[in-house]
Image 1: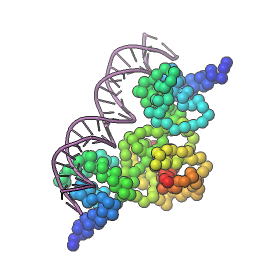
Image 2: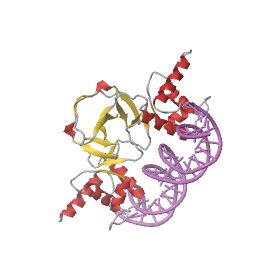
Image 3: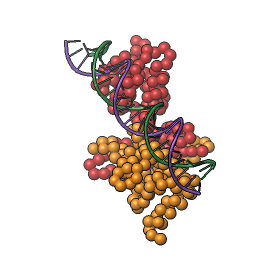
Image 4: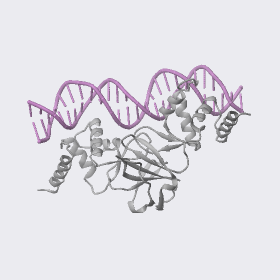
Length: 140
Length: 140
DNA sequence: CTACTTGCAAAAGGTTTGCAACCGG
DNA sequence: CCGGTTGCAAACCTTTTGCAAGTAG
């Protein structure tokens, strides 16, 4: 059993674990997102370009939207807060923070332990904290 | 000189101070945003509804977009980070943070001194920190 | 007067939707 | 086979743009 088969099986199991049928399209998208050992930021647009480039079989834009949403709901992706009328996603789902460069509109990760909070407010009654994100806007 | 005249003059001076001609439309929008002593969150859509309701003379949507952008550039408004393909603004321009309820999609202010950071990263070379925002996502 | 603003409608850009064809289990 | 998925195009929604008409100084 090759490394590639393991990889593919891992993906299939991951999808099954969330009740997502491991279709050809979802597996290909998952490969593009989770294969390498480094995490990254993307938009549907950049993901679409990456997938529908070169040799790959094509995947329709609607399916990419569907899948990214499904993966986000399943907790495989994190949506990044930046406003500006386009959704950014992060394959790094661990708690961490971001620099946002307003000039270049670029996001950079800030390692979790680079920021320390010494005081955090109590959430409103009946609600609990799901996550906490710091965005530091930077400029020249 | 009535209280209302003072209010209007204040607005006019504020606008002039940023090189914005105090037009009828800008003054009316400013009244809607800065008149009361409490701050609030809004989108262009809600602001538009508020203004073009009832007795007021109407203001075109394009002008509302223009004006909100101008006010944001002038520092009278702050854009809020939430992604979700619609821009949220805050009339509270002081440094502060937000709870974001994913269920109701509602934003609540967190007072500045309710959050304390004991460690903040150094920005990338050649850049400086413009601002720092914490968003705490909450859920049931 | 003149330059800045406004308003309208059209265009743009990103995302969602409806539905027939497809396919995984 | 059945119900979940895909692909396509059209629809949608928010935001931007071009340009003629209006107005503040």
